[in-house]
Each structure stands twice: as C-alpha cells, then as structure tokens.
Image (cartoon, rainbow, N blue to C red; front, top):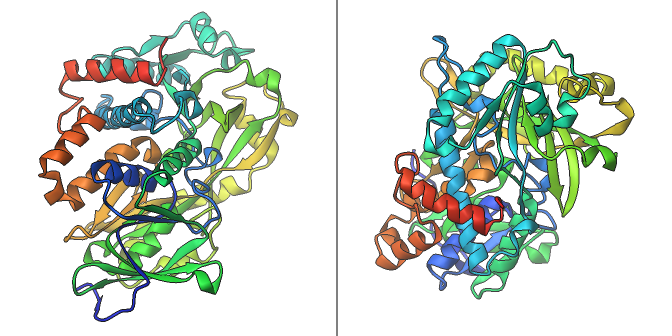
Length: 503
C-alpha cells in the first residue's frame, strides 16, 4: 500500500524537524540534532500545558536507570537451568551510552549539576526460598564474569544483606533462605527533571520552538516527500498547518494512533496493549530515611515484566520518596491523561488480525491485570510485606503511575504477538519515525535516538562533521561496549566521575 500523498496545500510555516511529544525521547533527539547541525529549525509540540507530564514524569516511571543490574526479568532461566544474560548485556551497554551523552552535556554546561536529575542509588536484587536463592547465585556467576557486571556483589548471608537493605531484613524469619546482589554505583533518575532541563537548554538556541497545549490532528506526506501536519491548539486561533522534512512521533502511548494516521506501510500490523500502574507511597520520613537502594524481586506468575515488584528509593523534584510496586492493571487508555476510547479506536483493518491473535493468546494476562485493579489496600500492603515485613497499612498511600502501551505486532504462527520492550518504526524514506513500547524506555533513550539517526539521517551521518560530533557526544559510538572491555573501563570511569555516581 502506498502512502497517501497530498498535492497542493497551504502551510503556515515550514520546519526541518517536527518533534511530536514533549518527553525524554523527543528532548534527546532534539538535543542531538541541534548539536549536530545548529542551523536546523526544530518545532516540538506537546498536547499538555507542560513537557514531561506523561511517561517521563518522575511519578510515572521507575526512575531506575534500567541497567540490568537488579531487574531479574532481563535474565530468564532457560529450561536447561542456564541463566540467559544476552538481554541484560544489551540493556546495560545501552544505558552506558545514555550516561556518556549526559556526561558530555554536563561537561559542556548543557545540563546542570548531575544531582538535579541523577543520584547514586545502589541497585539490588533480593529473593527468598531455596530455589530462588540458587537462581540468583547462578545469575551472579553468569553476569559477573562479564566486564559490564564485574562489580556486582552477591551474598546469602543475612547479616550482610541487612547492611545493604535493613528494612527488607527487619523481622524476617531466620530460617528463611535469602540472597541478594548489589551494584553500589546504580542510580536513581528523575526523568521529568532531565527532560525539562533538556528542553530548557534547547529553548536557549535559535531555531527551536516549543508549542504546548498543541496536538496533531492529521499528518500526510506530500509529493515532495515532506510532511503536512495539521496542529490543533487550545484555541481555534492556535491551529496551524506545518510542513516538516522529518517527523518524530515520541508521544508515548499517543505514538501508535499518530503512526496509524501517517499511513506508512511499515505501520501495518502494529497494535497496542495498554497497562496501567499504581504505587504504594510511604508517608513516614523516618521510614524513608532507612532505605537507600532500589531493591527488585521476582515478578508474580503471570505478571507482565513492567510489574516486577521493587522497593524503591526515589528523588522526585529534589525530594526523597519511598515507593513500592508497581501494581499493574487493565485500562483502555493509552495515556494517563488519555481517553477510554484509545484502545477500541486503535483497532483498524490493518492490525485487526494482530490484535485478535495477541488477545486470544494473552487471556491469562488480561485476567491477571483486571484482578490487580480490584485489589484492596490491605492486599497490596500484604504484598509489600514480602519485601518489608514491618510495613503497616496506615503508613502507605496509593498513587497512580504512568500508562504503558505494549507492542502488538504481526506473527505468522499466532496472528499477533505481544512484546515487552521498545521499538523504532521508521518509513523507508527516513522522513518519519515513531517510538513504540515501554521498558526499558527512558533509560535507553540515547541509544534509541542514535538508532533513529542511523535509520533516518544516513546521508548526513556520512559527513565528517557529524561523525566527529557524535564521537564527542558518545565516545563509544560505532563500537561495542559488550566486546571492548578497555573502552568500557575508559568510558565508565569518566561517566561515574562526571555524574558523581561513585565517590
């Protein structure tokens, strides 16, 4: 199917780059492009009154800096008992890419002091029961042999673990087998603060404009390959028609409907499965002060990967917080401030087979999510007590986390399959790209946007000036941190020092 192209159109303005969505992905791509070519005209549109108010907001994501250190779902145990570490290596290397770019921005005064968006917070895994202890032991052996994870510690000694996570070990039965791993230079990231700082830096440069309270009503490709985009503002006078040479759809859960509107053949078969989330938030400062780590466990049977339980130290808007969750739930909204009609409206002839196939093969997951919605407060605190045995119902309140839209795509065997992760969908001519999916999301935003550059700006990447600038911003660009231990040691030493993640 050919993309529908329009001929003559009246446009209010022309730009080189249109970024749809004011989250960390768009802010990262905009920053990269501006540094690669300061002459580019860039327009960012956000439908809400401010940027970073959906998935990038500090309360709407885990803030983990997903590095694979503590997330057990990135290292599944295979049928033969072997622990698979390939995904953890890939995610850790991608996070190291983010740290390099943020370090360069700090060094060049394009980001403020690191503690305004990132803080050292140990990443720890915790399990109980003999079988799980053995799994964690094998996971540590497999990971720690690789340079990316060489600093990971393991212990099955309750006294050592109590030093790492005192709340977790308080009043725990002495007879219960337990084990934990720890990486001391893990981090907590306020992606909301990071995004706002990136956008503020963009606004100091000529050629960039931010329009809030502005959504995309329609987008069509013209005969010359450029995109005609109809923008809808809060007032009729704010409506505009923009012509853009490149369009990036970085609108979180809102990216899928916009991708469908684009009509590009590459969007065929894609659908979305929305998942909501809830946190338990501690309201006692004396408890918050006793926990200084991100402690991840194993997900309950049938739970989606983004529902891996964790007792989480957070710094949101500069203030310490302690969260537990997230508790997943079923919703038909694609955005926290979206519409209940988002899911049914996303079902199209081009993805009907995928949606039906994925739905048919994930009925257990749907039932699990609906059951999570109707849990009582006491039941949720009961789950918390597996991590914090002394937890009391009255010390915790419920808060909404962000919406996640998991990818549904075509599958020859099942008609459609549900995938947990992120994916770039780009047009063949490189004039439009969209980011779909969720975790690890924001943590790997720099690697994701480098992928967009490689797929959509191939000709420009051949220019010496672009190559040199990319190498300055991300020293490991074009090389493998998984395979090159010396390069890894060099860049990690620099980023840990620059971002003040290690004393």
